[in-house]
Image 1 (spheres, rainbow, N blue to C red):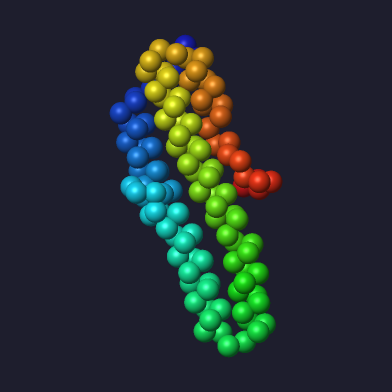
Image 2: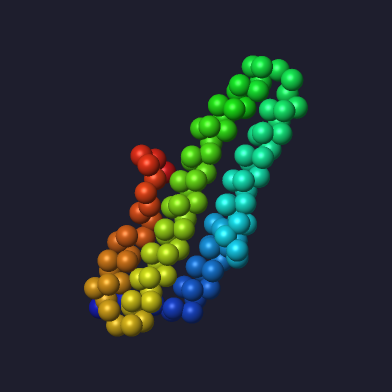
Length: 115
């Protein structure tokens, strides 16, 4: 831990960029928004299909894809939060807390998903 030399400004700039890719500035863009759009497009395709086998296949795809996208969002948000917490603790001089935050980064309740 004593060997850490963090450029906090660069880290927070990177976290801001990554956060925008996960949830956008308002929490509805990025991957979160893309996930919503995928669901909407699947529903629209099901309505347009006029074919039971295609509608069923699209529905099954959505059922399988949705939880995976949610897990990706949860993991991304956890990484950004954990890294931010670790750097903040480092800046406060609490290297033990920084180590714990770093250790927890990327851990999210994924309901059995492992991505």
